[in-house]
Every structure is written in structure tokens, then in C-alpha cells.
Image (cartoon, rainbow, N blue to C red):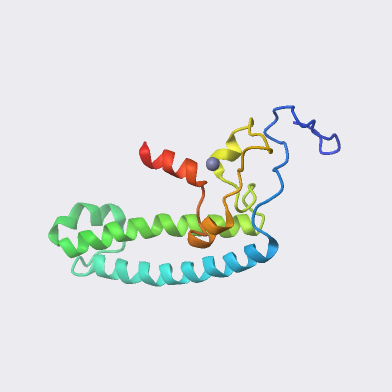
Length: 154
Ligand SMILES: [Zn+2]
């Protein structure tokens, strides 16, 4: 890898090149972090309720595998399990976003993860930063709109 003291030439094609200016400001990040934390709190509470509901009548310790096997016992139980799986995924995305804001995830907060993998973006024309408006709507977004749509098509 390039030693930190040697500057990266702008067209070296290295994935280590710096991100273009832009992205959420410190104020944006502080605001979105607070939003993420409250989303997380709400989800944790709801996750617990769903898990309790999914467990009702099963008399078993909490286990996704077991619940999936016995889900046909009750459609309510089945709904709770699928909601729980969706919420667990969202929870992971939220925690990942908080990690990014705290500088513990390797990627800065607000960079599209797919764009960041591409080394050929041109700071003049492409924007690996997820627009703040999108982050306000979905603070745990991992992809820009273009890559999100691409993923949903596949
Ligand atoms: Zn992207």
C-alpha cells in the first residue's frame, strides 16, 4: 500500500484516493446520529415485542431456526418472525451507520458503499456521497439512489 506520507496522484486509479468534497456536515452527522439512535431504541423495543409474540405458545428458548420450523403453527407467529427478520436487518444497517459516524467502520458516513468500491469515479462528474436529503429520509442508507435501484432490480 501507499505509505501515508506520499501524496496520491489524482489519476493513479488507486482505491485509496481521497473522496471528493461534499457529504454530510458535522451538524448533519450529529443530527442523523441522534435520529439513528432513536430509531435503534424503537426497533429494539419492537424487536423484543415481536420476539415475545413469536415465542408465544412455543415454550421454547428464542431461536430463529426453531421458530422457522414451527412457524406454520400460527400465522401470527409467522408474521412476527418475518417482521423480526426485517427489523433485525434494519437494526444492523442502523448500527453500521452509527459506526461510520463514529469513524469505526473504515468508510466515512454518507459514502455510497457501491460507489466507494469503484476506483474510476471522477470527482468532477460523480458523487459517491449520498445526498443529505436521502440520508434525512433514510439515515441508515448504504447506497446512493442509483445503486439502490440497481440492487432492487437484481
Ligand atoms: Zn453508488
